[in-house]
Image (cartoon, rainbow, N blue to C red):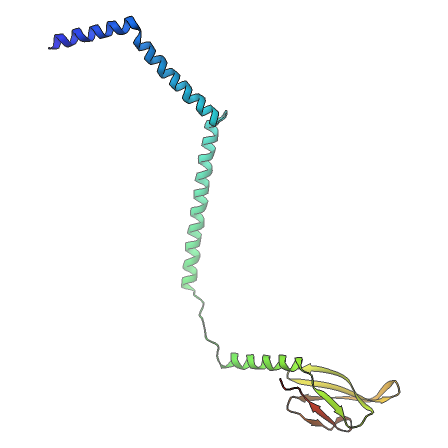
Length: 173
């Protein structure tokens, strides 16, 4: 049996040498490699190996940056969890401050109507001062004012004795 195999292998090798089958196989392999190299050169121009290496380096750098950001976020998250701000409900002082601010805004938006009993006394100016109004008045002498003065009123004041007396009305809002 062994002798038959030896004889058969010798015959096959003779035929390969006669017909040059081996060179065809080698040349076919060589053309396949050349086609692959040409295709690679088509999709990756000269220096394609350098470009691939640079791309790999850039990807590694992006991964490293992403990892550092994630670690930083974890550290910050831990800080927030440890030092969590306390959500307090507004207390009595907050409510009082809110009410005072609302009253002040309401007061500034609705000035009082002041009517003096003496027709020569007129209002020169009015300014809101917190929840009160400062009213400046004067007696008209021709084109100028003499005997000027001022007084302060709040929303609950209906009359005042300044300038010979006056009545004060606030709009109901």
